[in-house]
Length: 275
Image (cartoon, rainbow, N blue to C red; front, top):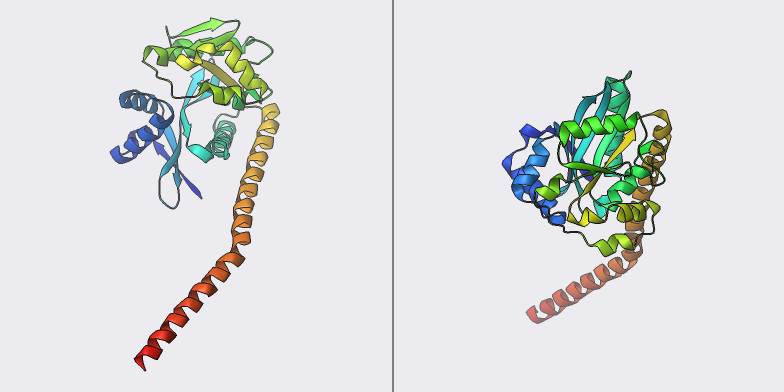
C-alpha cells in the first residue's frame, strides 16, 4: 500500500530531502543542488511512501500561477520508482488538481502545464483531447499566447520555438547528464512516443517539451477513463499477487506438515534415547 503526504516545500526536513534526491538521481543524474532548486521552485510537494517500510517511491511538485487571467497548475519533479511509474499515482495527483481547479477557480480557464523530459511523459498528456502540442499540429492561439507568457515568466532566455512546439533548454545549460536508455523508448509501440522521439532528438541532452492540458469537461471524460483504467490495472495486480499466493498455499501447507512431522519424529527419537 502507498501513503501520500502533501507538504509545503519549505517544511521538508533534511532526511526526507536526502531520500528525495537519491530517488531523482536514480533516474536523472542531476547534481543535488539542482534537484533542490527544482523542488523549492514549487509551492507544495506530494510525497508517496511505501506504507510498510516508509520508503519514498514518488514525488510531484506543484505551483499555481495566474497567466492572462487563466490559472495554471505547473507540475514538476515528477519521479516514480520502478513499478510505481504506471500504478496510477500521477493520475491520482492530476485528479486532485482538477478538483482544486474547479473548487478554487470555478470562473477561470484552467490548465495543467508540465515539461516532458521523456517520451513517456509526453505520451501521458498527449492522450487528452484538449492538450498541446499535438502530434498532428502546432499550438493554436489563444493557447499559444499563454504558453509564451508562461515561458517568458519562468524560462526567459532558456527556451526556443520550432514548428509551433516550445522547447526548454534550461537543464541543458545547467549541465544535464542523461541516465535514460533510448532503446527502451524506441521499442514502445506508441504514436506519442514516436512523435516525441522524432521532433525532440535532443531530449537525450536535456531538451524538454512544454506540454499543456486544459482542465475542462471534454478532458474530464478522458481523465475519468484513465483513472478507471489505472484502478482496474491496480485490482488486476492485487488479484494476480493473491492468486499466485493462493496457488502456492497447498505446497506451503504440505511443507508445514512435513516440517511438523520431522520435528515430532526428532522429539520421539530424543524421548526414546532418554528412556
